[in-house]
Image 1 (cartoon, rainbow, N blue to C red):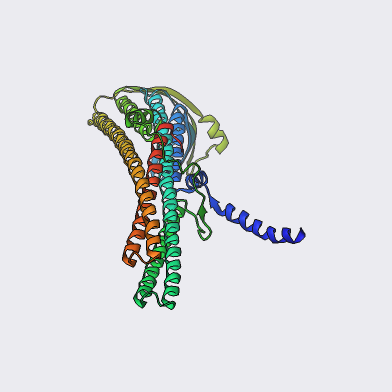
Image 2 (image 1 turned 120 degrees about the horizontal axis):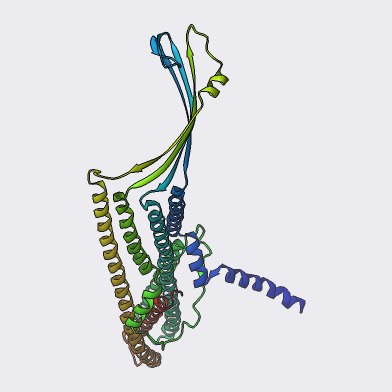
Length: 436
């Protein structure tokens, strides 16, 4: 018993290691979303939009600034008594100024609304980037599974050719076949091995493409696991009109483009605030220190106390003519709104085209798969019958290879249709539900 456990433990460790290094579709998608550069850029755009809201709201706050000024006058100059003297003077000014916007022509509240609309659009673009990565990873994931299946088919062909070569070698030793038949079998085995290496290379390249989508640094042990329920051949394909109607409700690209139109409407209102008067409150405090050469000057502290002054007032600004700056700003904003509307229409059209293509490809793949399964079954039966005939010498090597190649071709066509059906139906489901 201990011996059996000692033998099984290393095998169990290997199995756990292999499983741990294999990625599911969900883990691939989650990892790609976390490490994708484009998604990070969209996240940075969203953070920038949040800061724009904070910046817009800060316009409600007053501004306070201090100032200090030092001047020297050589020769005739103004003294602190407001008289002129032919002496050198110095002047030191200190103070602070406050400016509080009372009414800024609705510019600040409209800037805040525009910033909020821009943030909403940026967040939807952030989610749309995740959707793009999800679809790309899903397609690459299925491509890996497809090329791996082709590799397994190619391996099986090599096994058949190897068995046939050994059988031909035995027949040649028995003197029942000419040497040329053995050479043909060797040639076929070499060709099948070449095909197997090509299939293996395609599989590994597909793995590399998927790993690069994930931004993996080390891909030496990277592998994936098959999809659950991937052997279902009869699936319900939703009509494109219904899928499109569902996608319009929650598709992030569409929502982002619609919110961009809303933001453009709000930006027009921001531009129009240039026509509206503004009113601000301002106040200031300050003092001065004078010195006149050759005269007794009061101390710095006394002068600052005696010269202390305060002031406040209101400033009304009425736009009369600003060289058409506001008018041009409004026109540019309206052009931006037209552009946003056209971009929204384009996004919706592209979505419908994508859904429509996915539907017809899924429908075509399902029909092709049904036909391919029938063709594959017939080809496999024909190959089995041909193998029996060839085994008793009633078929030529050429006929045998043709039957084998046909069986291989129909198997590959069935696999291609199968994975195409999985991909397109999952795309339709993704647009319907918004997740994989």
